[in-house]
Image (cartoon, rainbow, N blue to C red; front, side, top):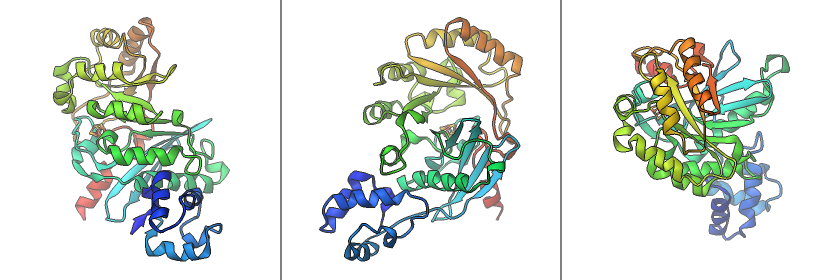
Length: 354
Ligand code: SF4
């Protein structure tokens, strides 16, 4: 049985043809699938009745069941989804006055083992399907639309999407590309590519393909300016050291006026000195980029501390003087373990206690 949400428009056209239907029937299915409350082919009233009867013999429409939600004092909401095979993933919505940024997962767990990340400490379980990626968006969209105005911190709609939840998206390339195709299709979830960001810890081998096949934004988790430190923080650096990663950024087929987002987590005494800020400024000189300095959230069992605010401001100042666009991203949702690097820790702990 085929889950129709695993297919983008081309896939649905081929699927329709495989059932001796014209390709446009696939486009008709696409135009129904992502509307709220569609979970049955019988609701697709412009399909021929005989086709509506035939479809359930070959395919189904997946939807997530009601997620568990935890709401932070700052309005961030963590969504916990249990998948059909019992695995658990998380998404986080971060509201601001004029936007909702939804952070979604691309894998159950992660194989990359970054030392500051709780997801990394869980290990890798499996890749998410395209349907499991887009259903995070559908489910959060439906939740936000059902919220009463007085409980809402941001607008009703999801305005921005970031692949910064559980998993390394570029290690799940085929499914990622299908999901992006669905997310950006007018008949699908109709999101603008410029509102979608894919973040990678540095899977150099797949970066170019992302740039050639999509127009989404690229974010790089750099987090250190020398290979010794990065080797210790992010094991992927032994495979793709900083020089290779930055060369891949220079070679990235970026659109005019777009810039790569460089993510740099501020760890007390590890990577946050003025010397390291100057080194970062020098390393990035030939890359069209913006820099995000991320406040770190302490996690149980992980031996790093956040840099003091004064240090973060001093680090920022060095880069500002070097004429970089540089932003400090404060921690959101840390009281519900929804901040960067905290996803799935608590839930998996609960599961392993059962
Ligand atoms: S930071 Fe990202 S890539 Fe690294 S272990 Fe965590 S989820 Fe994986």
